[in-house]
Image (cartoon, rainbow, N blue to C red; front, side):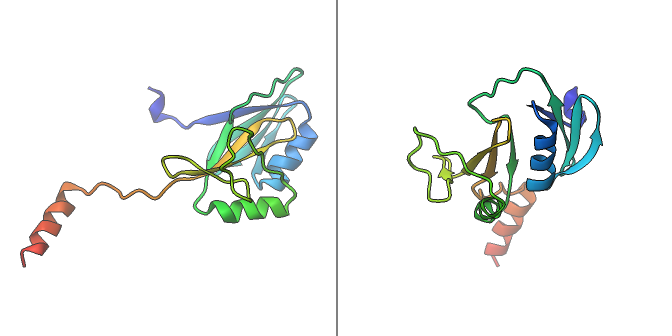
Length: 145
């Protein structure tokens, strides 16, 4: 099935010049192809197709997102590049940088591209990884010494 193949992502644009500057310049994605109907960027091994459309309806949820190890550093760098972060009326819990901590402990911030597409940036809460059976046995065995 599809789990054996790479994922590709799509986002729409009215203005390919603004999209190229934003995704390539501001976000730092490498442009790998450009045609009359799309721009294709490399997003750390995932192909992002920015499709040129006539009619675009921006939705109120994230269309694409990134998981980062240090959300504050990324938010600060994007702020310095002139990117504005989205603040939601319903989420009064966003901090001064625009970062919201979810009930699970994951931290998120949102930006919009020039076409109004909502993009998310997430730092996952560090969760302890489950121990392998062999590790659990070694730990139990080491405790008996």
